[in-house]
Structure formats: C-alpha cells, structure tokens
Image (tube, rainbow, N blue to C red; front, top):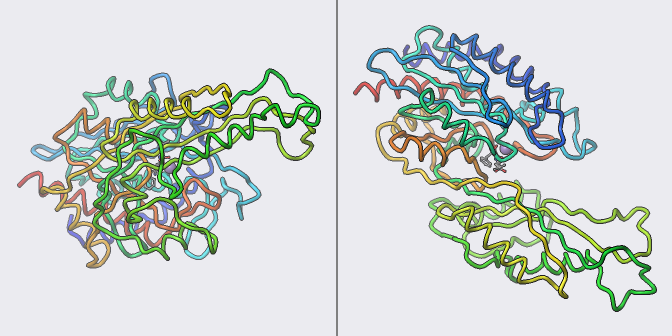
Length: 448
Ligand code: BES
Ligand code: MN
C-alpha cells in the first residue's frame, strides 16, 4: 500500500480504534499483589478478541503469572517478521481524590483522553491494532503480537514465558510501543532505558511500643532510625551514595532546566538533585527514590515510641549495571549504615535489566523515515528514558540479531503512573500512522 493509502486507511480506522481504546481503559487490570486479578483476565480476553479481529492466530498464555496474549500471522514469502510489543496491565490509581474524573471511565478534555492506561500502555496496544487494521489482508510482513499482562508489576514470569514460547516469538524486528516522544510534534526513537531494583527495608528498635515520656531520650524510635538510614542513601549534592553502582555521562540531547521543572511540577525554590547534565541524571545515572513508608499514621498516633518502620525503595540502574549486583550493593549499604544498632532487614521485590540500542542499520533507517513522514517532515531524535521495560533486555538476549525499535505514545504531559494520566489524541493519530508506515518500510528493507 502507498503512503497515501495508509494515511487514508488510518484516518478511516481511527474512530473505531478510539472506541476500542476506551473499552480497554474501562477494565482495571492491575497485576500488583492484592488487586482483583479477574480484571487482568478480562483485559487479556478483550485484547485477544481485538487481535482475532485482525485475523491473527491468538492464544492467551501464562507461566505462573498474569496472562499475556500472543497473536501471530505468518510472513508472506521472503518478507520479514515483526514482533509488536505492548502491555495491557496498568499501574494502580493511587489516591482517587486527585483524579479529575474516574480513572476507569475515559473522557476527552482539550484533545486528550484521560484514564488510567489511556497512554501507558493501552494506547500502545491500540497503535499495533490500528496498523494491522489499516493493512487489512494486505499486511506486507509477518507479525507476532506479544501483549504482556504484568509489565507494571516487574514481569516476574516473563523469562519463563518467553522461553516456553520461544519458537513463536522469533522475529527480525521488534517494535516496542511502550515509551514516548520527545515532545508534541517532535517524534523520538528511544535508545536507552534504565534498569530497576525495588526492595523493602524494615528497621526495628524494640519488641513493642513503649510510653514516649517514660522511655524517650534513651530509647530510639524506629521512624527516626529509618529516616536516618534513608538519609544516607544520597550525598549532600543528591547523588546516590550507594557504593558500587554504575553511572555514565554522554547523553546527546539536553533537557532544558525550565522544561524539566515545568513537566515535573517542581515547586518554586525546590532544587534539582544530583550532579552533571540533566539528561545524564535521568537517563544514564542511578537514581533512588522512597516510594512508600509504613509507620503509624499521624491521625490518632499515641504518645508511644514506635518499634518498627518500613520503607519501599526504588533504585533505577544505569545501562550497563546489573540488577543482582546492584541489589547486593544496596543491601550491603543499608546493613552497614544501620543507625544506633537498629535491626535492619532488606527484602527484594523485583528487578529488571537496563538496555541500550545501537540505532544504526536499515531497519532503523526504515523507522526514521516512517516517523519523519508521519510527523510531516520532522525527523525523530534519539533519546534515552529513565524508566524500564524489562522485556527488551530479555528479548535482546534471546534474539541478538533482531533490530529493536522502541516507540510509544507518551508525551511529557501524559502523567503515566500518576493521577490524571492522559493520551494526546493528535499525537496518537501520528503514532498509528507511523507504525503503519514503519511496517511498510520494514517490508521494503527486509526484501532489499
Ligand atoms: N512505559 C513504561 C516505561 C517508560 C517509562 C518508558 C518512562 C518511557 C518513559 C513502562 O510501562 C513502565 O513503567 N515500566 C516500569 C517497569 C518496572 C515495574 C520494572 C517502570 O519503569 O517503573
Ligand atoms: Mn508504565
């Protein structure tokens, strides 16, 4: 199909794609422990139904974790096979009172579609579906759709799942629609992602709570001990102080300070932390954040010395670092810095590998050309991101010869993982067109 055929086809398909995206957003499929996983099942079934509608051979698969969907359609003779990745599970919504509308009832405001997963990553699923629908029965490549069901919860069963279905997943090119673009109107290819280790640290100072007046002054409380321990994780400049982590500089684009302040919603007077270029700090150096704390709530807190407190930590790893080694490093750090002899227990949640992509070669050129056409002459930039997609490194290891194209729908205002997540509908249309053009270009490049 020609470029103008594909433009027309995407235009024709967009209303249906939008309606199906809204249907997906209404399903609260959260893979985290403690959530009702029947919704993840429903979500997998809804995705399977969409893929069947694209004449794929579809199976729902799992390996001890949440269900993924695999859909395949063999390549026409001599044509390459492309694996299209996205995930159908979403992050929890957090404090509902911070949402301007129901997270699971999609609504459009000012050209954006609001709802949990509207961007991350149900729009990724629908970009693949849009491209397939645009081609109808004239798809010029073979495809394998792999739509994961527990990406947001660390992809714990992913390696087993990939091993079990290795034969079905082999591909020459892979398109990961789970990242984003540099800005509205400015496309990007993502060429590095950080790795991650999430863990918990519990601090104990006593066997039970005691009267804070009777014992305070001699007996340490666990919340203060935890605070002191957490304070050792960064140096005064705000760089991560855990020894033995990898960090690198050398980003090729700059992130203007004002832009990052604005996009992050940083309050006036609050400083950035860390040293070096901002792009290095958020893409290729380690970062450590406290995601949550268990301690008595302030409302109704008695005058008692708290004997136990716990924090959840998230350590982002630079490309080139190893999650197992990094976990050992943070455990060693936390144990070594136990304040006042407090008992410190660290436990692991999950991890994922970082990745780096050398975006040279015919498939990357094919992708760049597709983006440039879809964005009416604006060529994509290469960027890193600070987030993680553990699938990529696993797939890279399994199929080292495959070209990996990391695309996506997110823009700086998507607020993925936060309240009021949304999708920019104008950019989404371009992402869908870009993917269709990309498949056409890849077919061409694969033949040549
Ligand atoms: N879509 C994100 C990855 C991403 C983040 C891409 C930021 C571009 C910019 C993905 O769904 C995600 O959030 N992954 C988790 C992975 C973790 C649970 C191992 C993340 O990064 O927190
Ligand atoms: Mn995400």
